[in-house]
Image (tube, rainbow, N blue to C red):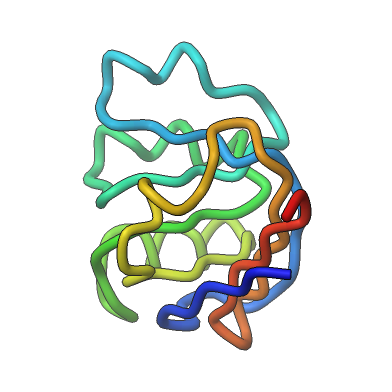
Length: 108
């Protein structure tokens, strides 16, 4: 089992399919229950938080946009996961623990 570590930014746990989103032109690929995996977020990304079961970013910390919005929506977030876009497979099953700051690959 592969476990990636980052900053615990919004408590809670969730499992879902990793959806790797590189920019706004890919927002249409995102479906309810997916785990949002991206480099970073800004206010344009906020609508995805209403669909996401959890958020994983490659950058950011406790005061970043992703952390604040994830806490507002009550979904787990692990931020600053180095190389998340390269290490996670689009559509792969993952478990996110926003209190521990871990992302576990379930398919591995």
